[in-house]
Image (cartoon, rainbow, N blue to C red; front, side, top):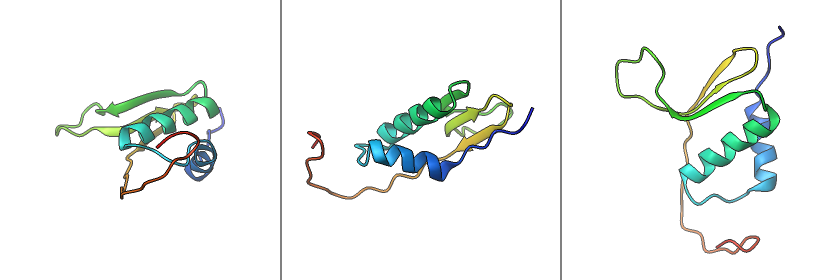
Length: 91
């Protein structure tokens, strides 16, 4: 089976066209997981996943296993700042 490519830049560009604004890291995490699901419907996606064999309490924001069993561990960093805006009916 040929390796499946998960292009994060492409995923983020696609997501930003749909959702340019997020209210929290959890909101962003869920939206990105859903975007991965839309583009890779056979992928197994887990949020706040603790990989097997890790001795410390470490959780990965997104754990993605593609159809070819390629594993992607994605840790999100969500920088915030104050913003007063109304975008598509969302404050």
